[in-house]
Amino acid sequence: MPTLWKRIVFSVGSILSIGSVVLLIVALSTERWITATILCQTGVDLVNASKPELEQFTGDIYYGLFQGGKTRKCGLGSRRFKIYIFPKLIRKVNSGLHMIIIFFLFFAIGFALVSLAFCIYNARKVPYQSIKGPLGLYLWNFIAALFCSLGFACFIAAVRCHRLTERVANFHENLFHLVVLEENLGFSFWLCVASTVSHGANILVVASSKIHLPKIQTKKPEEPTTTGDDLLY
Image 1: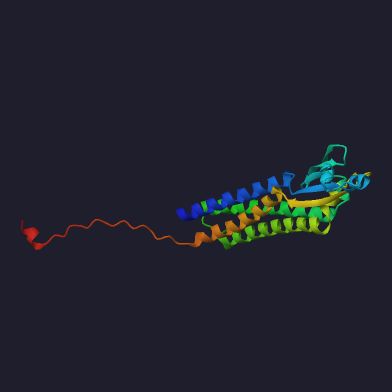
Image 2: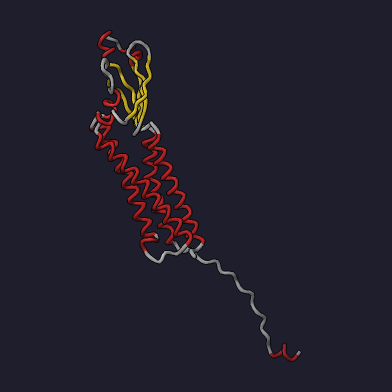
C-alpha cells in the first residue's frame, strides 16, 4: 500500500491529467483559435474610401479547427456568415497540415488518459514494474506534452506560413476580396498551451513522490524502574 504522501501526490497528478483532457476537448470544440480583423478591399477601392471611412468596411472573423464565423462589411451594412471547415473549406487550405494538427491533439488526449490511469494505479498500489511507476508517468506525460506542443506549433505554422486566416476569410467570396488587418491567437489556442503546461506540472508533481518525509515518532512513556530499596517496602 502506498504511503499517505504518495497517495496525495498521485491524486494531484490524476487531477492534472483530467484537467489536461478537459482543456484539450474544450480547445477542439470551441471556435476561438484565431480572432482577426478583416477589411473589404474591394469596397474600399470602389469608393476610394479615406481613413475615417474605413470603419464601414472593417469586419471581423473567428474560427477554430472545425468551424467559425465572420462579419463582412462592404459599405452596405454588416453581414454575418457561418464558417465550416469540413467538408469543403478543408480543400482550400493546407488539408494535410490541418488534419495533422487534429490528430496530434487527439493523440495528446489519448496519452493524457494513459497518464490518468497510471496515476490512479499508483495511488492505490505499489507498482512491481518501473514502467508502471513514476518512470512510466514521466514518459506518458512527456509524450502527451510533445504531441500537444506539435499540435499548436503546426497551427501557428499554418496561420503564419500558409495564410490560413486569409484563405478562410475569402472562401466563397466571388465579388469581394478581404484582407487581414490584424489577427490574434484566441483563448482556444491558449487552452491547448495550458494543457501542455499541465503535463509539465504533472511531471514535477510525480517527481515529488520521491521525497521521503520524516516519520513522526511518538515518544514512549518511560517505564518506572524498581530499585532494591523499593523491594524492601
